[in-house]
Length: 312
Image (cartoon, rainbow, N blue to C red; front, side, top):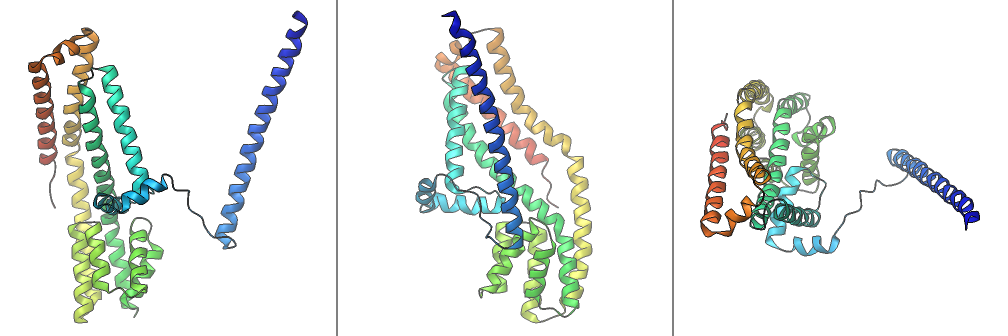
């Protein structure tokens, strides 16, 4: 038996060495293949292929429903490379994880509450992504207006100016204008294409720009002077928005700190007095008290967020 120990150790070490060499060779080959694909894609020798979409069956069924159509529009506004089916599956998985985590760490009473919080958090995440992308688009509006003014002053048509701006600007303005240019190329009217853009990324600045372009296109007036004046106005609004956001940053942090203190107090109470949450949520009075406290924390969060929201 002792004679087999050394050969066994040697074979094990050899297998580990071969395994490490195999993983290294696989990683090197995969990186070389990806580099080759990227090089050939940039030269146009092979078409650019996007990533493989997951949960195709769920995505097809979900897109047929009213909820799936709304979710698809919201995901398109966020700019995330996620299908409605993928987002729905990830959301359900996150809700299940939060449910089980709250049930195991706290009590089973907090499981459904954590699941509802997960659903609210998923919708809030999409709204946050949409707002962030809209703000980035707003910050690019002065440059967009300047490019359109220069292009129209040079004698280019408005449709051509939009396509040129889509090539010069970065995302998200470049992506959105490329979408508008494609719609115009297939015969869509300028009013409809720009109107859908304003609906997808709602903001006062974009509405003003779209209205200026649409009215100039209809009436045939001089769009150059209007865009020049609009560029200066957008620059001033951009600086004002930045100053207001800086001044209200402390209030925004307070809004998120209020519910965090409530969750922290529950965890602290359960660690200091093990089983206290079980005894508290076992009675109806305790359950009502916990739900009332959570509602008050939610109201405090909404009120503080509302106080920090200033429309400019």
